[in-house]
Structure formats: C-alpha cells, structure tokens
Length: 405
Image (cartoon, rainbow, N blue to C red; front, side, top):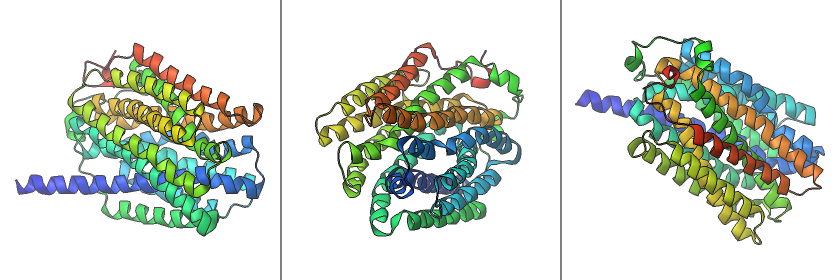
C-alpha cells in the first residue's frame, strides 16, 4: 500500500513538472503574438512579413517532429526534453536581442527545432508515466496547460510590454525556460509504466505505419484544427487591436475569457473521453467542428467587442473539443513502442498547419486591403475539413492504431 502511494506521488510529481514545462513554453510562444504589434512597428514589418515571423518556426518544427519521435523511442524522452527545452530557452533570450527581420526569422527557425522536439517527446513521456486508461485525461490536462499558458501570456505579455518592453520581456521568459530545463534534468526520472504493457508487441516498420489509413485521418484532422488554433492565436491580438481598437491591457484582459472557457472544455472532454465515449470519439470531433465553425463566422460579423469575445469563447470550446479528442486517440489505442513515431507524424501535421496558417492569413489580410474576412473564412474551411474527415473516421476496435488494417 505504501509502495503504491509512493509510486502515485512520484507519478504526479513528474506530471506536474511536465505541466509546468508546457505552461512556460506556451507563455513564451504566445507572448510573441502580442509582442509582434510593437515589434512590427519598430522593425517596419508589413502584414506578410509579420505572418511569416509568426509561422517561420513551424518550418523547422515540421522536420524535428519526425526526428524527435525516433530519438525519444530510441534514447528515451528525458534526454530529448532537456535538449529541446534548452534550445527553446536560448532562442527566447535571443529573440529579445533581434534587430532586424532577417535576425528574427533565423532565431525563429532555430526555435522550431526545440518546439518540434518538445511536443513529441513530452507525449512519449506522458505514455511512460500513465497507463492507457489514464492518458486521455492526462493529455487533456497538458492541453489545459497550453490554455493556462495562453491566459497568462495575454495578461503577462501585455503588462510587461507596457512596463519594460518586448526585449526584456523575452529575456525574462528565456531565463524561466532555463530553470525548467535544469529541473527536468535533475528530477525527471521516468518509471516506464507503459513499457511493460507492450513487451510482446512487435515494433513495426515505418512503411507499415505510413500505410495506415486511420493514422492519416488523424493527421488530416489534427492539421485542420491546428490551422484554426495557430491562425487564431497568431492574428486575434492584432485583429482586436486594429479592427476592434483595443489597447494592449484591455486586449490581454479580455483574451483571458475565451482561453479559460477553452481550458474548462478541454478538461471536461478529457474526462468524457476516458469515461463515457470510448469508441465513439468522432462525435466530439463533429460537434466541436460545428460549434467552432458557426461561432467563428458569428465572431467576425459581431457588432460589438463584447459579442466578439462571446463568440470567440464558443470557438475556443469547439477547438478544445476537437484537439483533445484527436490528440488522445493515439495515446489510447497505440502501443508504447510506436508512440514516438506516431505522435511525430501527427505533430508534423500540426507544424505544417502552423507554417501555413499565420502566413496565409497575413497574405489574405494584405491582399484584401486589411480586411480579415477572407482570413477567417480560411479558418472555417479548416474546420469543415475536420468535420468531413471525422465522418469517415471510426475508432479502432483493436488495441493499437498501428496494428489496425
């Protein structure tokens, strides 16, 4: 009994450290979405350049998701986590030192190496810490960590930008990241709960994995919801500032509301996925896509700021429902020895979306003379992609996506 209690305490201590890492990382990332407003003015960036700054790190991140999955499977997630979080912290500090558009792009490209490795390796670590029946709830809490980071980023970044400016702000975030990397190195010792449940399963080749139709449906849905997620997070602060005429502090305060509701939706959906809708996960994807698409349309047609925030909140709920469902499916139905490879492929789709969405939206906004309508229709189309793909998707009957024919 005491041994089980000690094991549980250790498990939740490790998960708390992983949660903190996600919060700090998300704050650092989302701070750029607010900081880009004064950065663009100081460096003289147009809308296309602004969009590329926000999305450029996804280009290198796409490549790193594959490599990080393989490295995590081969060497363990702890080594990868420490390395990539150190890279993230360095790049965050150097962002505050950037003096030109080119310097920002180079720094963001290196940042993508860290970000691509972090998302994949942390999913492998999650599978090491928890049994399969606990992973959807655990993943929903990590997704909640991103939403918590988003809430804190909007408030903290807006305040720091007005008090000390964007350069010192990134220095503070970078130092915080170094502290997290040191903590992971010192305390993160995985107990490999997941490994023992899959010892008899044969490791499958990349060609077998890549021929799996279920995997590619997941990748398409994760690509679609990531287009919406990264597109809104990148351009919503600028939209509220330029179109709805909010100052930075008001922008930060009001942005908390959609993020908090998205957080609660993520936690609730994680609980439902583990408890009540096993095998019927597609229902949440379909419902979330419909809620998100309708709310997004109503949002950019709203007549007041209050209604914009209300509809953005419903959009966040829809996004959370789709995202947590798609991300939890590999954790529930995939064998441990395939986890890194499969999550790497899925996060590749997410990184591809991140590379496309902010840049495409910036181009559309510029092309349509600073009108955001076409950019938001682009996001609605991505939600339609999620909905249509979910119609064709069925959760595997077997215990592993990688084994499903």
